[in-house]
Amino acid sequence: MSTLNERHTLAEQVAQAMGKSVYNNVEAHKDITPRLELQQKSPKLMTLEEAIRHSGLKDGMTISFHHHFRGGDKVVNMVVDKLAEMGFKNLHLAASSLQDVHEPLIEHIRNGVITEISTSGLRGELAKEISHGLMEKPVVFRSHGGRGEAIASGELHIDVAFLGASSSDPLGNACGYSRSENAKSICGSLGYALPDAHYADKVVILTDDLVPYPNTPNSISEHDVDYVVEVESVGDSSKIASGAIRDTKNPRDILLAQQAAKVIVNSGYFKNGFSIQTGSGGASLAAVKYIRQSMIDQDIKASFALGGITAHMVKMHEEGLIERLIDVQSFDKVAAESLKNDSKHKEVSACEYASMNEQGAATHYLDIVILSALEVDVNFNVNVLVGSDGIIRGAIGGHPDTAEDSALSIIVCPLLRGRIPCVVNEVTTLITPGRTVDVVVTEYGIAVNPARPEIAERLKAAGLKIVTLEELRDRALSVIGNPAPLPFGDKVVGVVMNRDGSVMDVIKNIVE
Amino acid sequence: MELKQATAGTMESGDIMIQIAPCEKEGLNIDLQSSVAYQFGDQIRKVIVETLEGLGITRAEVHATDKGALDCTIRARVTAAAVRATGKDVWKD
Image (cartoon, rainbow over all chains, first blue to last red; front, side):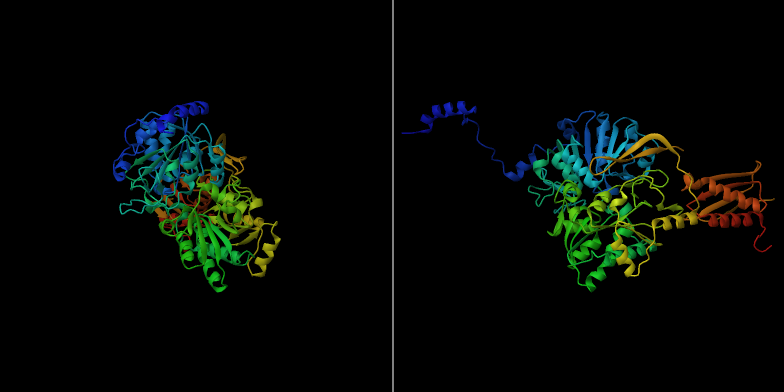
C-alpha cells in the first residue's frame, strides 16, 4: 500500500537531497473574490507618489519617458514636478525626445532636480537655455534606433521608466489607445516606450483610462510593468500633429514634395513591392501624396510604409496601394486609430524599427526614405538638430538610421529659410554623414551624391534639373550675402552619438 | 532734417519693420531685433545706416524688427519709412 502519508517521509528525504522544501498543505483556502473585483485590488495600483517610493528611485538615478504625445505630453512635467516636490536631486532624464511643452524643466535643472539629459531632440525655451549653457553636463543626443540599441545593450541603463498610456488594466497591460467608451486620449504606437518597458528596472504606467483586465490586444505587457497609476490626463491628443509634423499648405513645401515624388518615381527603386518612409517636416510628409497617382497609373504597390505613419499613408493602405504599415510612432490621430483597428498596421519598438544590431530591424529592408534637413553641406552631410544660429531647435529622430539603412535616401529642403541658407559649406552640427545621403532636392535643382552616378543619369533622363551642392551654396550666398561666424563659446552643451555608440560631433554653447 | 514718427514694413517672415522717430541724441540710434541677428546683425545695421545717410538723415531713432529680410527689402522699407518721416518723396522729387 502507498498513501500520501506513507510517502511523506520519502518525499522529505527526496526534498532534502534536492535542496528543496516539502509542500505545506495547511495554508488557508485560496482567494475566492470574484475576479472582476479582485483586479481592482491589484497590488500594482497606486498613486504616483507611492509608485515612486516603491520603485526604489534614488538621487542620481535615471528616469525615462516617451514622446508619443509630442507637443501634448503631460507626463514628463507631471512626474518631474512630483519628483521635485519629493526632494529628489541629480536625476538623469532619458526621454525619447523633448518638446516645447517641457519648458518647466528649466526650473528643475536650475534647482538641481535634473542634472543630466539624454534625448533625441530639444525645442523651444528649454533648447535655447541649454544652448546657452544651462547645464553642467552636456545633453546626450541619440537617434531613435541608437537609443533603442543603447537601452538594449545596457549602455543607457534606465532605473525607472514613467510611461504614459491611453489605456491600461490594473495589471499593466497598456496601449497608446483605448477601446473603452471612457477613452480620454490616443497616441497610437508606443514604439519608443517599448525598449524602456522591456529593459528598465522598474516600470510605472500612467494612464487616463483604467480599464478592466484584460486590456488586449496590448502594446506593453503586464509582464514588464511594476506599478499602474491612474491620472487625470496623460496627454492632449490634438497636439500630436503639431510642430514638425503638421500637414503643409506652404506652396514651396508642396513644390519640394512634388519634386521629391518625381525623384522617387524615376529613381529605379519605384517597383512593385517597394518600401518607403517619410520623415517629419512638411515637404517630406507630403511627398507620399504625390507618388500616389504614379502608383495607380503604373499599377505599383508598396509592400510596406514605415516610420512615423500619417493619415496619407493610412489612406493609401486602405486603398490597397500600401500592403502593410509598420509604425514606431503615429504622426496623427488617423494613424493612431488605424493602429488600433487594423491588424496589418503593426506597432514596432524602436529596436525593431531602426537598431543597427537588430538583423530584422525594418529600416534594413527600406528602399526609399524622404527626409528633411535644417542644413545640408557640400559633402552631403546633414544637420537636423542645431539651427544656423547655433541654437538647438530640432531632433535627430530616425534621420541617420534611415539614411544609412535605406537603399535610397532623399533629403528635401529649401535653398533658404528667410535669410538663412540651407545649403552650406559645412553643417553647424553633423548628424547624418554624407556617405549615407543620396539625393538632395531643393526648389533650385536636385543634387545627387557622386557615389550614385546611376541615380543622376536616371533623373537627368527624366528631365529633372541636376545641379551640384556647390552651385546651390553659391546661389544661396549670392542672394543673402555672407553670414558672420556664430559666436560659439568653449563649453560643450551637447554630444551627438552615432547609432553605433561612437561620438559623432559636439555642440558648443552660444554666447550673446 | 525735421522728422516725425513713421513706420514701414510688416512682421511677416522675410520682411523687416522699420520705425523712425525724432531723436534727442546725436547720430543714428538703431535698436535692432532680428531673427538672424548672429549672422546678419552687423550687415542689417550697415544697410539701414547707409540708406538713411543716402537720404540725408543723420539724426534719428530707429527701431527695426527683422524677420530675415534681404538687403533689398531692408533698403526699400527704410526708404519708405524715411519718406513718411520727412514728407519728402525721394521717388517723385
